Image 1 (tube, rainbow, N blue to C red):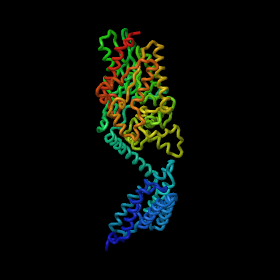
Image 2 (cartoon, rainbow, N blue to C red):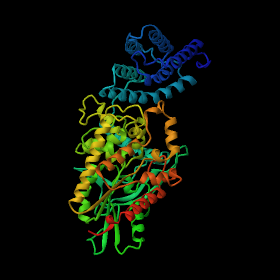
Image 3 (tube, helix red, strand yellow):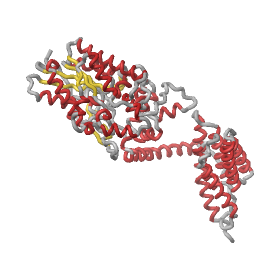
Image 4 (tube, rainbow, N blue to C red):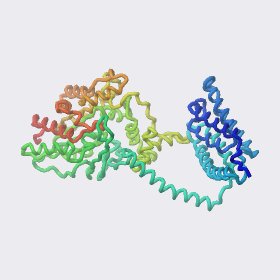
Length: 560
């Protein structure tokens, strides 16, 4: 007997082919008039499952979308066309003329039989996901119509019978057991393929006043990008150990006779981001001071914390620093971050900002929320979650999903839109706007408050500003300027001039690190260019500059 597969009318194949071509060609328009562009891939699947009449309808529907896009644009052709599609699909299914009817026993019949059996659970699963998506604010009637269409096709394949409760429980348990190795493989793959997404150790903990602080007793490996601009990405690691006193340093007991203690306050530069402990500014400065031939013994205490601004450093001075009996306090500024950090103190920010950083600040501000703590837990433990955040362009996929739910009431204020310019160059703007000046005033006010706290206790005080890489490295500055549409709005090292004016106005002991860096001959080698933090060479030059300042101002290093 002739095989029915060979006798399939050519018109069927032609119709399916034309429909597939029309769908592919019209996909850029699909969604422009109210439909959902991400669901266009369902058409080829249904064209194969259903009879040519469905393919013909899909062809006409795409033509309607194209004509509406070109000529009208405002008509709701998308939802209306999908509603008609659901009605026709249900009508054909009821009459049992929706699916292909092939002679029993043929090759094509057996192939379609297994194809249908495979597709039915997939169609039901997709329909359930689409129906569940209606809980999100951005979803529309299109998702419901597509879910109805897919359920109709699945129902037409074979009568659907709900399994018994025992079978249902067994199925759910098998699904959960199967998810464990699947998640493990996914997590392992992300850690191998996306090393920057790998979760790092947690060295910070929540602090009610300063929002975060170093976690006492925390330790582990930290990862950072150590490559230069224009070079292939390179990932490096360094060790971090936090003492029981909450310092990236050793334990300190009572001060001994003849000992002079220097307390370093600052952010990640003082903390030593990207540096082993012996390479940090504090350790290198201590070595230089004790090798100077002085009869005194110097102890340098590293009280730096990643991301801190002067208002947080003052809190740290009172909580930890003063109890260590310092004779000298050296405050390190980084105006490129400190101005925005100072605005964070009052719930504001500069106009061009890093949304990831701002989200982290806001999450600490709202630490009591379970969503915030859950997101923090996931970020610290899952490379897949971190890579998902990168792919979605959000700091918190969990929060983004929750906020899109119709029934979820947002508990944290949304971030405003960042200005369309590089946030790392914001303090290099030639003309400073209101927020920049307000942040500068808060930064200066807190720095003076630290100075006054020291003076009132007979503690010597000095400060210095770490310039960002663009202020001293010509290659980095030129590279950034070439990426801009309008480079004329920037003035190189504008923020350092602000600090210099502040020091002169208040007659502060200010250490000029920027001049020492420019005079070094190769200032670009003082930074990890892509990361922006100091290399071991940069930390050594910083320590040497502070040491030279102490040597020329002996009153600072005399015991009180």
